Length: 429
Image (cartoon, rainbow, N blue to C red):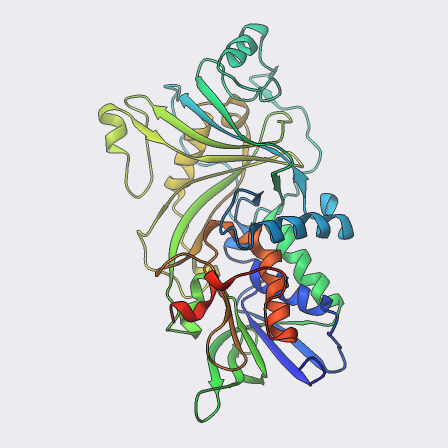
């Protein structure tokens, strides 16, 4: 099987497609003289959720069938390719924090830029507020944080606001990467080993006359607009929430998620925080659905906050389905009000974030499996057609494991690194 000439086409240049290309080029049976690997992406590598996600890695993520494999592969990849420098890999602490948001006036607008969170903030310069250098917590504030169970180095949350803290996991069980940098690095490393990245929107998967085997993929070239058909012995569908565009039978739905990145006023310690913030009466909200409930009598919000290397903090809010699903990643609508809400929420418990610089405001779509749990990884019942989609919010975490398994399906005819019967696409197709 591995000795045959193969034309392998991967549809989708997000984290799943990029890691699939990477591990295909690293499989012991891969032979660039016989095996052509094409990574087909409609807009740009990491243009969707893979470039705008949080990048949290966790042994306590789901599904358990692939999490340990993928978590281990993340560490191996970082060690092999200097991931600490190249894509911000590091171990981190993780905890949940409950707090009372301070009744501070929200900012009028989201300061900062649209676009990819590339993590290129550089070295931190001293930030000043009103000409006075911002200082760390006072001794009294630190005492209040200790009383609430907050670790000593988590000193960038407001002491008066914090009610309690619970440790969820330590550095042995939790890590992080910068998703844009990680995804683009995987694609680049695959290219260096012989894979080809093609920018074009997949329009149709071509099958044999009896429909039992793939024969190629037809796409619209991004630059010329021309229709092009690539012959294929193997097709991997890894188009995330756009999977149904090329394979309508796939039970994959999409949910929009907003996030921001902030350059804090000073370096902050490495924590991933799952928050529960009780907002006071009158706390403004400016999203498409204004927070009338907040103005009437308060509301509890749950933004996630991930401190990153290179002076960056990522924060995200709840998902929504308020607008029509777009045709491609470059057409995703960003609701500035929802981004402002996130800034205000996290700023209500941290001056370092409230007074920091918003460096990106963005939105993306997360893929979910409608029927049962996901993701769906493996054979579809059509010879040569594989699926790797529906990874929800854990796509970055489970990308390497998925890519490794896809390489085994292609070259070995079966998954060898993990038992993934529960993720078989044929269960729901």
